[in-house]
Length: 103
Image (tube, rainbow, N blue to C red; front, side):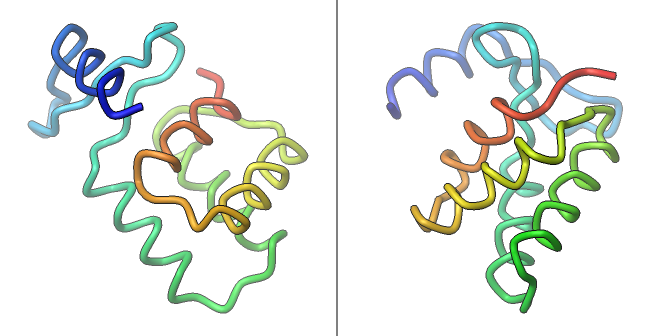
């Protein structure tokens, strides 16, 4: 798990216009979000008192603010997996990769 992440980072890195380093996922479909953004999202989710629907809306907003769309039903399913597994930032990245599509 960690080894594949490091291999992806070493071969597909690039910088955004604001200097943040991002990485393309192995299938090239979605960029790996900066760890600081995912950590911020994770903190917001852990500290807020949102239900699954509200959490899904927040994640959809997070994705759309970065140029990605997502099927709301798939996002809600991902939220359930995130909640059940107490996902770390790397786990969140994998879940976002599964639901996001470029607009």
